[in-house]
Image 1: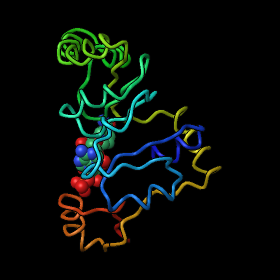
Image 2: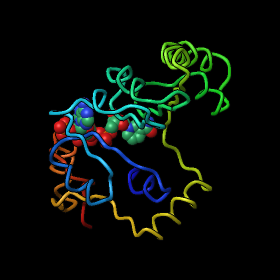
Image 3: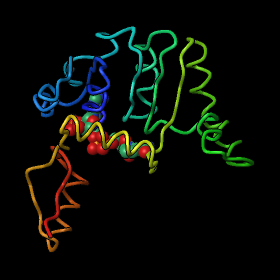
Image 4: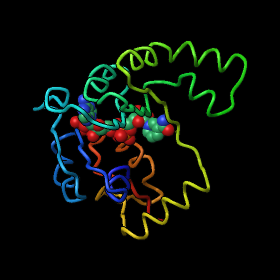
Amino acid sequence: MAVPIAKALGLRVIVTGNARAKERFLAMGVDRYLDYKTENYWDALSEVDHVIDTLGPAEFDHELSVLKKGGRLVSLRTGPNKAFALRHQMGGVKKLLFTLAGSKYDNAARKQGKEYRFLFVRSNGEQLKEITRIVEEQQIRPAIDPHVFSLAQANEALQLVAKGPLNGKVILQL
Ligand SMILES: NC(=O)c1ccc[n+]([C@@H]2O[C@H](COP(=O)([O-])OP(=O)(O)OC[C@H]3O[C@@H](n4cnc5c(N)ncnc54)[C@H](OP(=O)(O)O)[C@@H]3O)[C@@H](O)[C@H]2O)c1
């Protein structure tokens, strides 16, 4: 979903992922697609404004390296930091823990004049309104895996989610 939303905002979008997903992403208007098994994005890219990370700490240095100065790395997985705690108005022990846990990433980013952020999805009416507008205007449809399960097959559906390979969201038909 990040891809069509980013395209709707007028951004140039580069994705790194598996070979299976390449055509699907190019059809969404992705400007460049790198197959992570054959091409290292950190060799191919530089001066990027924003990175969205779904892979976690092992990729942090590579992701930071492709950003331009002033660029921002937003992670769904690497871990919370002080800015995350402040944004969510956390105090006391939580703020201290997140500050300590995230300091390694904050410091590394700051040294290069870049910013590290952690994001945890939550409902936000104002943002959802804006996203709904983009989804309707651009007629964005989520990727859906071709397997459709009945409710009685819920365990099989969960197995597919756990083990893959997945080509989108898994549907239970009621
Ligand atoms: N913070 C939050 O609010 C939030 C929200 C949603 C998700 N998440 C987290 O975000 C992570 C990703 O979610 P997801 O649903 O996208 O995970 P996923 O379903 O596990 O998908 C991972 C995808 O990344 C590909 N991949 C693996 N290694 C790669 C690499 N080095 N470079 C590029 N692509 C690679 C995989 O390809 P293969 O098929 O080749 O393995 C697979 O297609 C999960 O850990 C999830 O918990 C966090």
